[in-house]
Length: 113
Image (cartoon, rainbow, N blue to C red; front, side):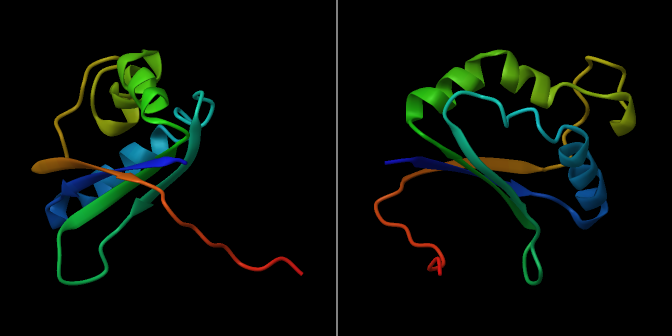
């Protein structure tokens, strides 16, 4: 079954817009990667300054291949829209990051009529 990677990002309130714009500017950079299944950026609603970046992969090897390849580099490279020079890595919007890994052992979706 699939694996899930959740990047847990601590983002101060004044950096939230910056973080969300950066993800919007690089939308689609992971979509065509072999083994990629799903992405979600989850914004905290109340009581925390923690964003969750949820990705789902066919296998750990697919995630590792993306991380070590050009896809990851392109996704994390700066763009003029985020205030950095093209190709220059911008200052992080998050003050802390932790990567969690889970195996999918059970799943459900809406019933199809």
